[in-house]
Image (cartoon, rainbow, N blue to C red; front, side, top):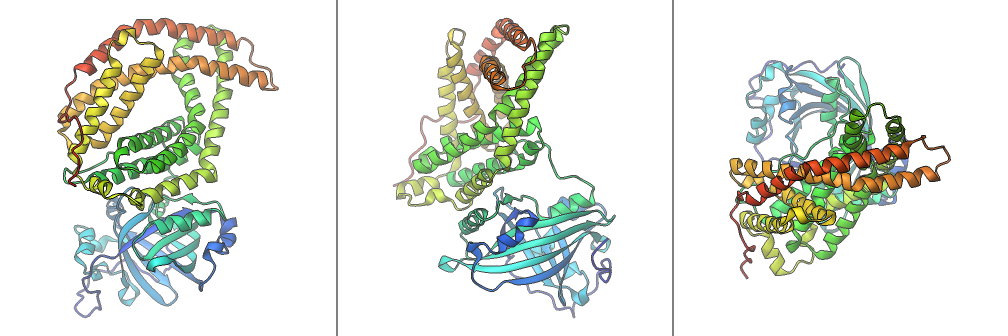
Length: 553
């Protein structure tokens, strides 16, 4: 039920000639970083050295969120609430979040509520009205509510920058009485424009108490509670990235990095839940971001790029064993047990492999739940949102950043295609390491295609991607089989070091799996060679360019 029975559903739209309404203004924007904190750490957080000084204020806020029965506002990413704070009653309209970074940026309008009631017609700003356009405001009704005790302190920083720190503790309530606790930290840039200070302060506070990035707003979590949806734990694939031909190289760098970072963070819950697909998607996100750092290396400070790559590789290595054993159990062992169902040694191998898989997922959860992971996300968020690649940049590199995107994309795709084609020549005679090199080159090409595909006619892109995907699938399976021997050796060492006895006959089962796949790889060789030929014959969907034109001097 809503917090305040004194707040009735929205009345029919009144004539507002006599109502004090806000004058049309430029839409104010809320820029904030949200972080989850454990309730038992809240007191220590408020006493953190980074927050010493200034006067703290504590308020009790009671908020009721409104929408139509069909959830039209939620579908638009819009929230509309009535807030009681002491004797004040305010109504707030927020637009959808912009960008894919860690910090949320939203347009926000907050005005007094006429007579203490929600009257959305009082938002007279044209941009605010556009968010409500087409919605029957007479059908708005309470959907959920929350009540929080908010501790607020303004933290002044250098050069006129001020961050408002809000520590919230409370509860969200759905209409049917279900509740969800709230314990979070909000850092809002209330003066100035340099978003890096949000991350700097978050990193300082993270050294006092462990924090976690919170990607969902209170409104999004409230809607999920009202709909009876559990917290999202499903794996999330990379979202499409949209650019226009008028965008600059710098806009593409920021857009790609933000999308990869969001992809990483979106799969955190799935990894913690032990979902194999979540581990896979997290690794994909890390690889995509590391690949992007290579694609844009011409405009990135080498030390920055190298440092970020090392940190990302550390995360990939930590979750790698879990993914390897997921593939072994789900893709390599299954066809062999299907072909030889009576082999007890395969059952023993499955028991041993499940143990290794469990240990791998324990390590993956530890990597994602630990403080180093949050520090990595905050560091990457600061780098992207603060456009740190501009720090101490020479004039020629700044000129490169402002160059149009299409020639850059053409040159990058051309270079990667040439590299992959060179590695794919005489494929039938290539040894395993050389074929692995082709696989890596194709992976980088595929990521670049995904990053820039929106700039080109989609029919040609789809045709090219179909051929590229077929080759990637074949080489991916080849690599899985090639790395299986190393997995078995690692498993043998683990079992030898363990106190528990190894499942009897598991090593015989391992030999059967290795032999079965070796025989079947020979059968698939011809199809793989055809896939390589198809790729080498595929016409590029972009305009081939031998080099990226130098920017004007």
